[in-house]
Image (cartoon, rainbow, N blue to C red; front, side, top):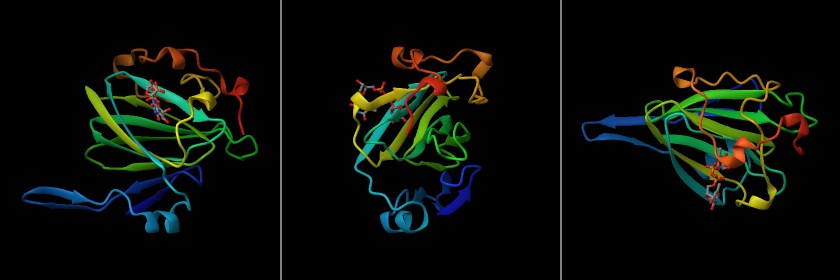
Length: 181
Ligand SMILES: Cc1cn([C@H]2C[C@H](O)[C@@H](COP(=O)(O)OP(=O)(O)O[C@H]3O[C@@H](C)C(=O)[C@@H](O)[C@H]3O)O2)c(=O)[nH]c1=O
């Protein structure tokens, strides 16, 4: 596994080693001891899988308590994945990392606790899988608006169309008005 640093020191891009042969390919997607030593000393307790159509945007989400670190990847299609630092006292508060994750580059993004996370589907559909360091707790869930101007996220919108959001995400807050850590 190769580690790529990003503009935010705690956020990492991971690139697994892929073994291709006449049957197809093989890759390790997660090794606990390696991850603890090289990326973050955390324990994952929940795995999730979602499928979304083109133009869907999920996010930007975080939990204000029972905060979740997330190790995310795409197993079909492509998304533009974003992690926003929402730690008030962080020198990179309000800054984000964005990366294209797809089933060809097999990249993973490590989104630490204290970050809002979201993604936008660029292909006909995309399947998204991720590990979380804490359990889902809807009572602590917060949505920040994907297009909060203070975040200045350059979403690669297909045909410049507005993304499709859940009602919860439509009602997201500006980061300045959202509870942070
Ligand atoms: C996230 C989640 C949802 N659900 C349920 C609640 C709801 O009925 C249905 C869909 O939930 P949501 O609309 O919140 O799903 P979604 O918009 O996909 O939420 C996810 O978005 C991405 C960007 C993240 O970062 C995740 O942590 C998570 O917040 O699934 C669970 O049971 N467990 C979970 O862990």
